[in-house]
Length: 86
Image (cartoon, rainbow, N blue to C red; front, side, top):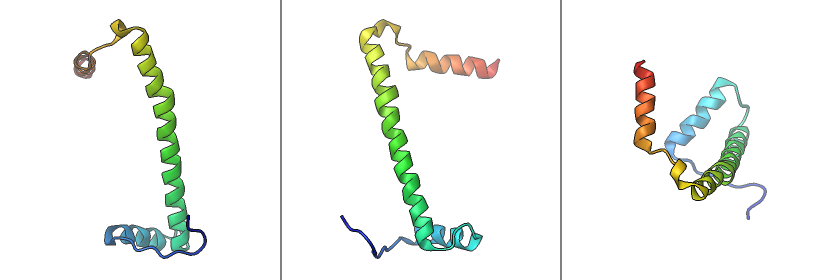
């Protein structure tokens, strides 16, 4: 795994995002922009992993315990539409 200094080539659209952040004054260097971006990516991945393990797995376990309690997606959608129109 690389450590220390590295060279990164960004596609033009990502390079533009970095430039916008620098020009705005929110960041003083490209390193700061990339550090925050990577930290946000790590936090997003951690939140996704938590959601999958805690909510999705738990929901699936509930379904396996009592499949009769499942509500069809079409019923949920119909309820949402009726509430929106009410």
